[in-house]
Length: 232
Image 1 (cartoon, rainbow, N blue to C red):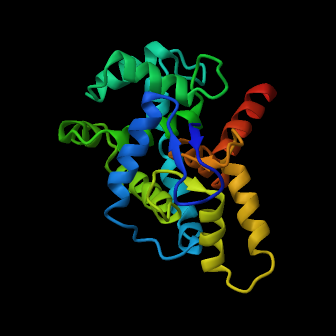
Image 2: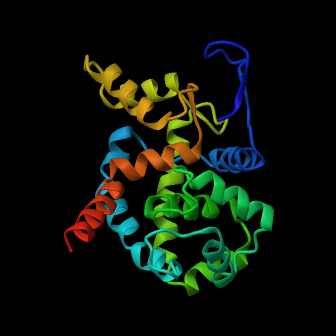
Image 3: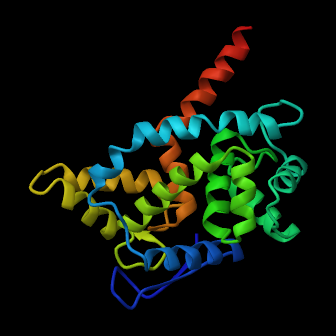
């Protein structure tokens, strides 16, 4: 995601977003980063995993509500109807961009974990108060708290507040938690590699969210359901 100007992790390095959606994500995250983070350590993020996991799993009912043909994926038309029902006023182009960004398997349908990432991106990007009211009407107020926790976690990792997490920022965050432990560097690199799935050395919020759904086991419930369907 994005192109780079400059070398290494020097202060002169600037990251150029590749898409309009990525530019909006970075802008929104920079605004949010200016408010600071309530997180004190990487451990404080890990301790929230169970609560985040439970909240995200509760999204399953919302996902099924918008999966009109019950095929386990939300297609482009279903997503447009979903936005209409939630009264989220995104343009056709913005909906297309979100769909393409979150349909990472490029199978023209969003699985449950992709849908969660999309909802969290909508939360980050949408500052329109009418959208927040609509979310509450759809039974999503608890989700807002979960999404805010995820935004807060990213802000904690993004030490220089540029809207991206670099390798050195990840190492810094882990070292703060595991000072003196020899394994801390390896842990940081492993976590970073799990997030940086396009291997460009920088992680945006979308990549962070996809890694997070794996860390809390959201992918696992999809695998379990698919196995159950095969046995039937």
